[in-house]
Length: 435
Image 1 (tube, helix red, strand yellow):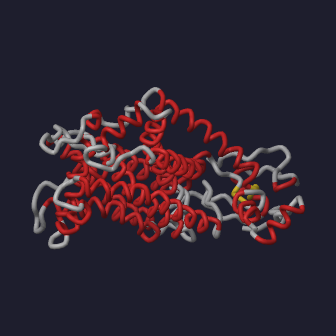
Image 2 (cartoon, helix red, strand yellow):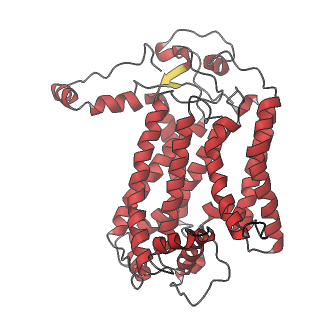
């Protein structure tokens, strides 16, 4: 997207001109995030969560680097080194809590970001690759979070590693050798800690690289918007700075308050008490459960209890991985020409059923494996796959969408006469959300 108001970067001093001729980095940043980047004028606060995800990635990298300076990746020293960080390192308790709760906050904003994309059709053409790169980031986040959960070497860390890596043994022939390769042995021990610490330190930088590709691919078609209508004129857009930098700044401020509440007042609320007990291979916890952001997938895994042609464990593992992989095929499963759920009344109802279903899966995944919770998990898992493989294609085919606005400006100004003003702003109207 390029319009007349999208001004070129102009160096202000001799030094900046000299630098721009040799390494045009400020020009690149200005074009990507400054007044040179036009953005739809009707973005609402759900579009803040991409920036929040980037903020949490940076926070996790910085706190993780400092924590790694004091951590010992040994079976005998890992648990004690975490206690040393908490008790003896200056502000170590805050760094540890910021990192541990930061993982949860990272998943919170990413889940909102994903469901926003599902509702507003961010996976539809021409943004399919943006969606897929986002899912790659999510998969890398899951791997990083699992390995980080093992590092404190508490009871839940040890037995979580035992259970999660045991999934791979469900695959015939290659499963058990793959599990032994991942652990460096037949059970979690020193070799597993070395591997997990190394990968946990490396993967955030891989995520950062994919994030750059994600943002780069976003700048080619431009940002989507709540109406799903393409940008048609200069009047439909605003410069990213200062309008959306200010809006994102407000969202960041609100989010940091919530983040600080968890760090200073509820630091262990999202964790598990058993992880404050040193790992003991001879004592199995009464209820082994992963971190809360894995609970929906854990419920899908536990939904298979009966062998049918293949072992139930293998069905569960395949279903768990398939629940994520099928999201890559959404651009072809949802064939409706209308992007936004605001103009798809039937789709909107099933979308909220999906949200409720995922919440139910999470509740069942975090609960003990009693017959009631397993049965509820089976129903919720069946509906999850039914939604994407049956309901969504049928809704796309038979639904009658509501009329779309003629343009983004029409949806914002509701048909009122637009007066000329700089940057495409009407003089008597401020940009508002389209909802």
